[in-house]
Image 1: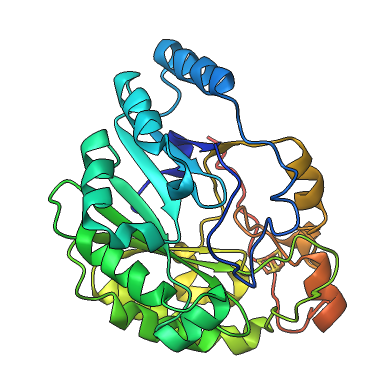
Image 2: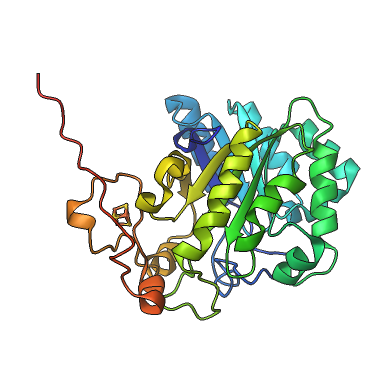
Length: 305
Ligand code: SF4
């Protein structure tokens, strides 16, 4: 279970530029031509929410939203239009600047969803393909940790390079008082094949993922795992939450997204899971259907009075 309810959030992609070159980037290759949401569209959605109160929280993302000079203005507009929370999704590089952090907090951004790619600088920087990225990201988290009214969330994409680091990532963030949630998203390639050779067999990830979840729970943190078979998680399955906020993004993104081919599983018809995304096309091409390690969950029969 997460600390936040994704259904209460709406996500705006206002900007497509980035200062890292992460090897697992989901929009690499599309950043150049995806169109950010216009200010007119943004204002329309703000007005709609004023009237209908669909969402309590606004999330700003793009590629790297802190590169957008009007981010503080966007946050103020969201707050003035009734949003109780404003979140940014960021690689954390610019948060190393204390003055910039203050500007964002004062503009009303109270939730920071920061990418932590590994537990040490060498691995994180190698994934981000930028030296110094880990140090800046950690400094940014520590800068924000000084604010009473701020919530910190982290996201780690599970790939061949990061999966062994998962428990150590929990350890290296343990000193942050404002950290409330850690996400672990098992990599999906936005493609029918794993061109970059980043997908890892579930059984290899599992012990590291379980250890990381157990450590985080012990520390009182919420965990959200995405894109991992529910039947393999056993007692850790309540960490699985594939829900996402309502996303406003260029329609062309969805054509790319559909290339993943989620919801495939030999056992799908007889499985009662409501959360599981099953396998995706690239995983199946690389490792097969793995029907022997997966086991359908019981189908819940509705109670009849
Ligand atoms: S059997 Fe298939 S659909 Fe059911 S939980 Fe396992 S992977 Fe998911």
